[in-house]
Image 1: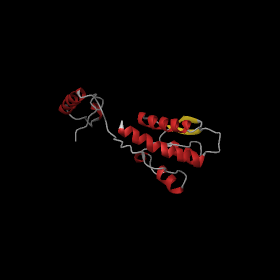
Image 2 (image 1 turned 90 degrees about the vertical axis):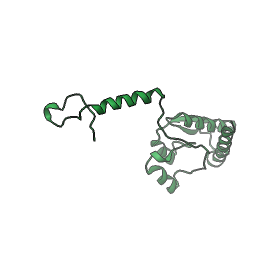
Image 3 (image 1 turned 60 degrees about the vertical axis):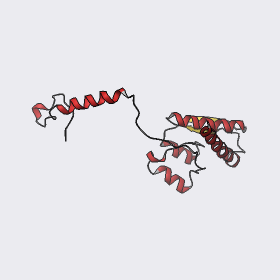
Image 4 (image 1 turned 45 degrees about the vertical axis):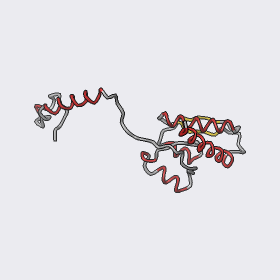
Amino acid sequence: MKKFNKVASVLSLAMIGLGSNAIADSSDPIKIAINEWTGQHVSAHISGSVLEAAGYEVEYVTAGALPQFAAIAQGNLHLQPETWGNNVGEIYPKSVENGDIVVLGLTGLKPIESWMYPSYMTEATDRCLRRSLQQPPLSREPEQRHSGRRLLRT
């Protein structure tokens, strides 16, 4: 709960700053990007709730992780409360450098990128891999190419 309060506080301050400086005189909605991951939905809705409580109209817009940066730079989206810069190439850092996107600050979130699966899959995957490795390698001979084996051993 303590971590949640810290994140909410940081987002609140950032959102109030954005609203009062950028769009305070506008009756148009503040368009907040919604991406493909649950944590970003939470960040976006917390941000939107803070802005709504401050009297602003908010609109949530589904946006892809990469196209959102062009939309923000063009003014079609106004806010992205959580982004991962490690998977979007050069568009994000270049947009920040050019001043097309303004970074308000860190949220305090510490994302972890990983694969997760149930523990019973470890044994099943190991068993499948061992069986596959016991098979002869896929033949390079034209008459044997369609033997059904797809694993090449190195």
